[in-house]
Length: 309
Ligand SMILES: [Zn+2]
Image (cartoon, rainbow, N blue to C red):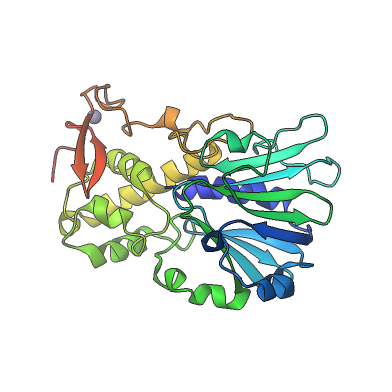
């Protein structure tokens, strides 16, 4: 499952490439991946221009000039790959992006790592193909078919059930330690890890960044929310923002799940302090990192740094 930094990597890459492109054609092979009527495709998709690519939690929002939005959820195995045969019609990405240039092809892909990111497309994992007027294409590949792309009127996007329920964005300026504290009180009697994973408490945090931020704040993941002080929450808030920002800078995690089109893995996992480092020394104190199960998920902790519950 992608977490916030991985989806943000997809968003930033597509935002550098898609705005201004006009959708000329759409095709799909699996109705659940693209549950829109032909009439809606003809009326709201074909001929419309891409305005911008946004993200809310782990959901991508591709806004169209028709005042409709392609709401896209990558779920377990989704990936988006943009391929253009012409260099000049693509805006030059900044140096931090992962958009490789070969002789005459611009390609950006992020999401589930398999050869579809770098191979010929469409292939057997391709669920949806958008072809733009300049012949560049966006492929939505999804082996396991849990993901989807759906058009909604843009003004209605905030009213989608998920959007109504999802918690605040952890990297927005409005997200203060006090807000984190207040949101956590919704899950007073659960473990702090379960609360962080609850998307209605906070948007976009999954297993990797929960473990990393709790280690940073020296909080054991099994600690009940009601036992966590405001000072601890303030530290956790700082650590959450730190690990998420670091991962975005690195292009998402390389948790065997996300690579960009160059086949270059995001490098956050090299920076992980506890996640999937069981048996290794804690970088802070040298104790041996342990793996256990908290909130039903594999959980990584330092027995010395995170020893209180
Ligand atoms: Zn330690």
